[in-house]
Image (cartoon, each protein chain N blue to C red):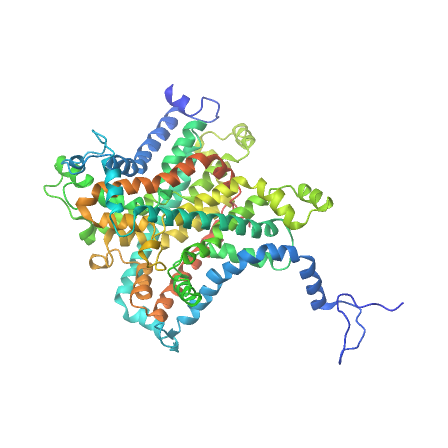
Length: 289
Length: 321
């Protein structure tokens, strides 16, 4: 039967056919709830103007066109800050934040996972506790810190805090724990320094976890609007530009849909490419007692 | 043979007594020296972590007892901010009520959804499993595309929901979804749930894939008859570490509702129907610049999030004992 093929054949024990059918039904039902808004967003981006304002509204596009994308670039080329600048800002913030976070969090995760030293437990407990509240709690003192450091209205106000996200360090540390100690001991006997071991042995071994941290940071940085830190128009991000275009209402509906697709395609494609590695990392995410 | 001082260096001044043991400070110095590479690797991250997370929490608590507007030096006013917050600020109490409604629905529902869908997806064959994982996970990573819900629940007849309801004859004229306090809370809960199958969902999928397969075969021999018994007796107990991690992530995000509410329902929303503790914090912290008062709100939020998380961890630790 078709559903038993979808489920990977009859290898599993204790399975009833009506249970399998119910399972597929539930997955399809909720799967479409999850997918419809995204499918709608993609279709909107390719709809000509008359289809965007059709009654009754249609989910799928009938005469696909790229007009919305060319409109978008025309619209933004004539604006005060060219749209390419918003794209650059978002790409720069995301890249700098991700690279910095992966290097610093891995460097910190290595001794926490593999060495015993004074304070290690306290530090890791602090990291776990900090997973238990959101960034809103620390937003106000952070704003003050940034203003005292003179970093308001610079990229750094967004990039530097992202270096120290606790979730990335947590996952990296959990993942590093499964690296065999014998490997590190052997390198030590060969006379490699701790820094060399970290950079040439540990880092290449945790590549799956890099991709996971990348996905996590894409979630926060790619969609960042600069928060309350960035005022200058030429430093604002793509998400901010999207918000402005959407505010423009009916006249901008097509261009808005085009930006939305540009914005969502990058994290989704990244996840498609890295899915198996991310799942591999997440297998070690559990909290031990 | 006289004992030499270990790690104490030469002593001058009043302390000329010979030492036989390095003592606490000697031990500490020796350990710090031995582990200096560990500290050096940890330092850059940890300094930033202190600067942006540890110190701000402490600062928030201290500032919450002051009157501070960023211009004058903070003035100590004791518990006044908290008294005002809990006794005089009706809008805060509305926000608090909404936050608890949000959290008590989206928290448990999203947690269970993360697990149930991960469990169902795990039954599929690998290619299909990868596809369904993407379908369920995509909303949470596609940036801030939730504004698409603005088009779906658009107040005119071009909105998908209004269009559908009008065509099928449930309503005669479009409903202004976000201008009606009756609907805003429900819609935001739906959108929040749509966004909530994130990190914990992936952790559960990964956890399910790493369960030892022989456990299930042994279970079948021991008389486990259907997938429900398998779930209860084998799957859930094997996944406790991931379940605890997922709980932390879902609880924290379920209390942090703000961006979705502000973008969809407006800020401030109609009759404060989508006002939460976080939007109240944003109001006082970034618009009115009453930093002392905003810090009191942040401290209350911190206590609520941390308290709920620690309590849940305690309960989950008991499961299966």
